[in-house]
Image (cartoon, rainbow, N blue to C red; front, side):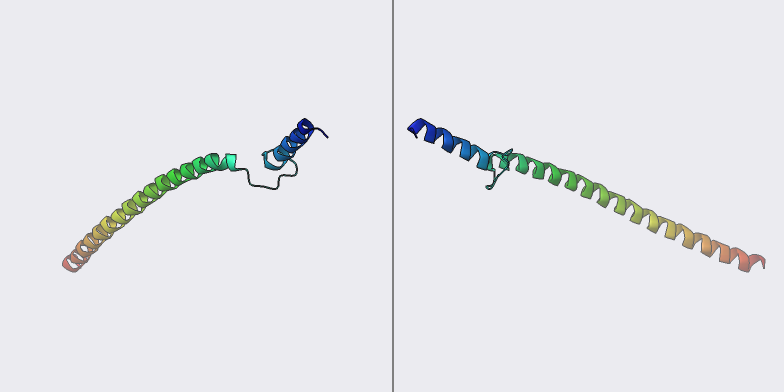
Amino acid sequence: MTEQEIIQLLKKSLQEYFSPNGENKRFFDATQIPRVCDNIEKLRQIMEKKTDDHEGRIRTLEKNMWRNAGIASVLGALGMWALNKFF
């Protein structure tokens, strides 16, 4: 085998082992790290947005619950006063 044939054989072997489309891929493809990191960053941003939205909805529900409880107690007190006054 000539030196060029050995070099071509080594190149072919390295491409097969390290390329993302290699059938017998046995090593981690380090060229995909930036793409994976970008995907993780996008997921983090989406989760933060949903978390902020979720917190806002919970605060709104809690505020409405306290308001409705206050209204119910005032109406209950007025109803009892009216019942005692007229019956």
